[in-house]
Structure formats: structure tokens, C-alpha cells
Image 1 (spheres, protein in one colour):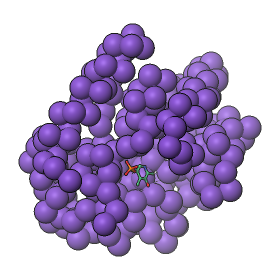
Image 2 (cartoon, rainbow, N blue to C red):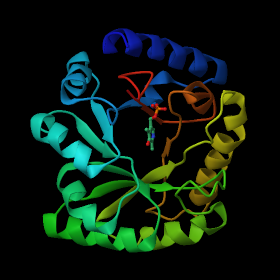
Image 3 (cartoon, rainbow, N blue to C red):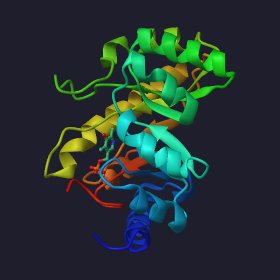
Length: 229
Ligand SMILES: *Cc1c(COP(=O)(O)O)cnc(C)c1O
């Protein structure tokens, strides 16, 4: 795995090309470095390179990195979150990409109130319908979004999904397109707390397609900082 800087530069070029093809402005696309596979030193390298956004998916693995580097960057929690792990997440992370049930919304809101802070949240949607994936079913999204919007300490930024694992990124396109449609569906409600400007979608294998389909936050691990050892 080469320099983070070289990887990032290559990725930025691909994002620019995908934006050009789809008539988008690259400024709308934020790269979040997923450091769950790598150590604190590599995470520091990502921050030193100028990457501002850092994502982790497990509290236990995130804590040592956050303790060393938490005064830098903006931290995103992207993994499945159990209620008994909410407190450390609320204390450290700015964004939660995996809000997927009412009981979790309640607990995050309660902890945020205690800390007097707002959590920026993405509603995770299981667009592909795979059993292995977390997220609300598309049919239940409007109901869940309206419930989540009632919590004053949660700011609903948008929707998040994970596409099926596949060697052919083209196969992910319908999933990303559907998430965009669901975003538009929420926006048509004209609910003041459901403007949902953002789409968190696209990982190392499929981020180019995700950009073409409207992603505003890309979650990139293997291709940017390194993958599973
Ligand atoms: C691991 C992970 C990523 C990054 O995966 P890569 O394929 O290595 O880019 C993105 N999102 C979530 C939710 C993850 O768990």
C-alpha cells in the first residue's frame, strides 16, 4: 500500500472524471478515510496528508486512535452501533452513518442531551435487501425518518447505504440510484428537519459509480489508507 497522498491524488482524479461525466461539481463530494483496517500511525498519515474526515466502525478499535489523534480531524462512526456503546460514540464522533432504528435514535438523543451536543446522522437504508446488511427497509424509511426527525439533538443529514459486494461495480448502480430516489422522496415531504442534503454511499470498489449517482460522502478504506491485513 503506497503513500496515502498518492492514493488520494489518484482518487481525486477519478472523482473529478466521474463528476465531469455526470455534470456534478467535485466540491460536493467529501472523502471520508475509513481507518478501521489500519493502525494509529497510518491514521496520523491520513490526517497529515490533509484528509479531514476519519471513519471507524468499532468502538474498541477506534478508542486508541481517537485518544492519540482525536484533537484533529472530524470523526465519523460508520459501523453497526449497539445501545451500550452509544456513550463513547457521542463523546467523540461528529457523524453517525448508521442510524437504523428508533431505539438507537432515542439513546443517541438522550446521550447528546446530556452532553449538550447535536449528532449529525445518516439514516442507514438496506436498499439491496440482503439479510446480512443492517438498515431500514426502503418501505419503512419515511416512517422512520419522521420519527427520527422528532429528536431535537439529532440532525438528519441524509441517507447511507452499502451496496452488495461484487466485482462488477456496474451492478451497484441501481442500489445507489434507489438511495437517491429515496432522498428525493423525503425531500418532497418538505419537512423542515428532513432536508437530507447528503448521500453517504460508495466504498473502494464502487465509489466511481456512487459519484455518478449523486454521492456526497464517500467512505474509502482499502483504496485510500489500506485494507485488511
Ligand atoms: C469498511 C467500511 C467501508 C470501507 O470499505 P472499503 O471497501 O475498504 O473502502 C465503508 N463503509 C463501511 C460502513 C464500512 O464498514
